[in-house]
Amino acid sequence: MKESFIVRLAEEKDHQAILAIYRPFITETAITFEYDVPGRPEFSNKIQSTLEGFPWLVCELGNEVVGYAYASKHRDRAAYQWSTESSVYVRPGLHKKGIGRALYAVLFEILGMQGFVNVYAGITLPNAKSEKFHEAIGFRIVGVYPGIGYKLGSWYSVKWMELALSGRQTEPAVPIPFSELRNTEKCSSALGRVFR
Image 1 (cartoon, helix red, strand yellow):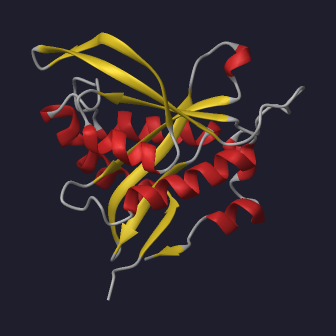
Image 2 (cartoon, helix red, strand yellow):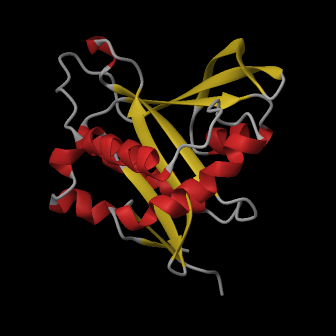
């Protein structure tokens, strides 16, 4: 029997588990361009401030956090406000179990409710697994920034991929901050679902 897991909002009690998943990506890879592992208070502040505008989700398997995903602002200028960036991390050894796909499904459903139109993912190259994963859920390549980041003694390129959440309309409504949506029945219906 396949194990089931739940996608829900990140809570204060999850911050240490989320940081434990993120830590090896910082210290051992260029998947993230962050150099230093943030302290618990700094990381908790990042999660809390993100939750004002965007969802930050965790995937729980057997009462244990095994992955997380969140969205963030794409750029600061007003014309970019309908676009967001997404990030997803799954504990090593638990890939190809549907965890990342479930996290993104819920994340994108909520982002659509908020009124976002585009989601972008920046993938440090080489990372064939992430490229294939994003392609499989509908992202398309929009470009590559060659040699844009330096980490662990090497220069890395970043491939940018895009997913359209909805059509581009004339006079779109301003996206709703997540803090205004999170306690609604509509948002609650997207969270806490069981995936298999």
